[in-house]
Length: 496
View 1: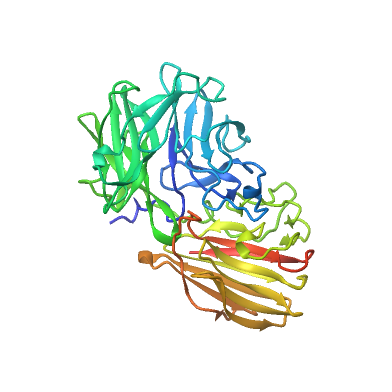
View 2: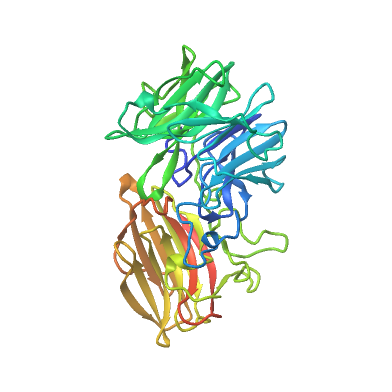
């Protein structure tokens, strides 16, 4: 059973807030990566199951202190949130919003794989909004939480039309009862056979993340609502159909340290309602082609060898916050990623130019070979598992000597073990185990790349809201005393 069938989760990695469209027989998905840059990843699939990163909506959002990790400010857990993806008149649209900048952004392109995305921005920041192109040519935006609002967008997308804003649904959480912990949000609006269907997520106290569906014959209502799905906490998303007429709902689930992971559930139509799941449950297997590895289309190894015409960084990589592009290179030393220090920092989470990729489940590992021969006194470089309660293994240059250290930020930042290093390069490894929510990380070092030594102790990998993101592998280097040092990463190898 299930050998050649898709299984849930569709992607065992942090791909939250999905918005999916189908154009012909190809599917496109946008997601959330908040404080990572480039931002708003765009993925493509020909079977709804196996996805490949093809672009990002933006390189950087803006150059504020919070986004640049400057002046003691940061945008962990903020940046840009849930996006809305649409296709209209041969054009792809992706919109998002940011409480960090106080703006709403709409990006458009004719070709999401080849062209860069054109940007329009306006104030205010419309929370968890959905863009909707109606058959009569009007363009709407629905947003907010609990009490949902709607307005018409101007035809040039430069903001909402004055005088068109109104309340869409007074209390969208109502179908889940009165005792609500998370008001209905994450709106996504669809039109099927002339009827409007609005998807939201809510969370009753003592219950689980719940899909709420409203329907109406007119976009302005009246709306009737019901619970769409209440199982495993799989919720927030919308509707998609296949060219041969199958229907699914795409949703996601909070799954501890690995992050928020996408699911598909089959949909049947009964009395004009989409009915989600099999007898109200999220099935393990789906009538879709089998899942392939996330490597190399969502995460990938990198040996940092670049031909002249190749991009400096493949799409699998994202920077933590805005990068300082003068302080990194894959061209200065052939076949290496060089990270240079340009300022003094007091902690790892303040350091710029940490280069990241998703960790993934059920188990994954990242390995690097690091050349530390050009570090300066006070420098710290290595391999991390990045979240608020991070763990890392790296090389510290302290008191004129180098040592391999393992650091945990479980309750407070603490060095758990150090080993003297008397050579110019070292192999480092980080492992994650998310099987059955084990949420455990382990760190290792090797002096020859063959025999591995554990260092420090295993760390818990809890999902925390201040960072609001699954754990990421990260390559880092920062100065605590003198600037001008650098390290060279020979490779990053990722395995499942």
